[in-house]
Image (cartoon, rainbow, N blue to C red; front, top):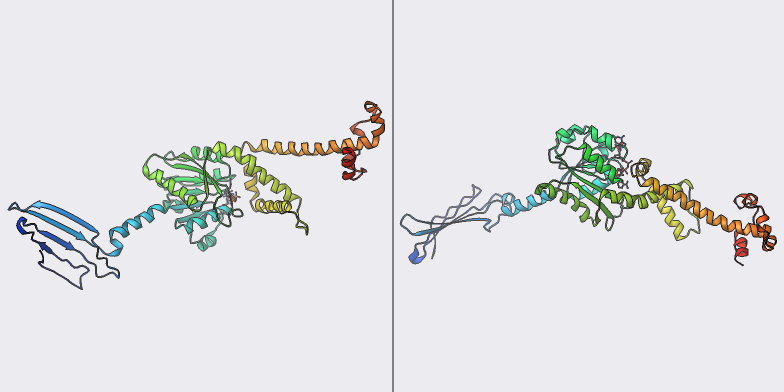
Length: 391
Ligand code: NAP
């Protein structure tokens, strides 16, 4: 049997308290429910959000069961608090240092994912930042005093050392995560380990795309990372994971790889790509009415690489110890190709000039390369030459 012993309601107060007593036949169990109902918010919830069950013995020895249920207003209720806390816990306060081409490109996605982004750069990008809803700090001291959880270094490879030395680390929280996106990784790793206080975490990354190649989204594009120094505390581990999730969410192909391995692969792929793009750019290639697919690909390559700064390209060369070897290999490959062509030409020219005589077995008496006209001048067209050679 349930009896309402003393209901109270008040429209002027924000809460209504109701007390119920339940007399359970012989056991004299008392059930008291205090319910706080919010009247001041538009969507009051009627479900009990927090319930306390107290069972204790009354002074006469009769067990008393007390249930206290608190149903608070929406913004303070348990589920809302938990979900707000969850959203907050997945969002980061990220300071982008170096708000140039790539820094701004990354920031757009950070903002779209709901992270709080602050920015600082050598140049004044206040207007560009405001357009993206980002607060721009001309003074790095002011930015550091905002205590960002993550410092995202998007500076040029060449300037990173001096930019790092200009940051007032002492103004940051002792637990701060430093992330870099430099296109060379061993240099970045060593520099960060040398320069940062030991309490700071270090995550080295390289998004293998840029404003051109990633303009239609990042799905399937490689994102390389190396957890160089992440503290063992759960909060530090989680913070690093939350940062990586940014790229996971966009559909990047996440590749965990050491900085050294990255540099080996990148010299053989990215540096070669940039070099070829720049060589082709020097040729001033233009659209033609009969462009083949292959040629269109070359034009795309020029467009893709020429929008990057020369600082970036020079950084790929200077700060990746494997780049020099790749440049030499490129030279050798070009030489070899030229040699192959000239050997065919050489053979063809010789057989034209001295063909019958050589067939007569007096080859050793003939003048060699010296007498070959330079660079194919005064030669028959290549097709005829090759045809003659083959026949
Ligand atoms: P960048 O020419 O390599 O770097 C430009 C940035 O460096 C700007 O924020 C610029 O600041 C800053 N900077 C240059 N010299 C400086 C100096 N002396 N002092 C202080 N700051 C200086 O071009 P980016 O494309 O924006 O690349 C930024 C970083 O991202 C590089 O480390 C690059 O390797 C990496 N990355 C780029 C791409 C890409 O596709 N572009 C892809 C992956 C990684 P101000 O603009 O304020 O002068």
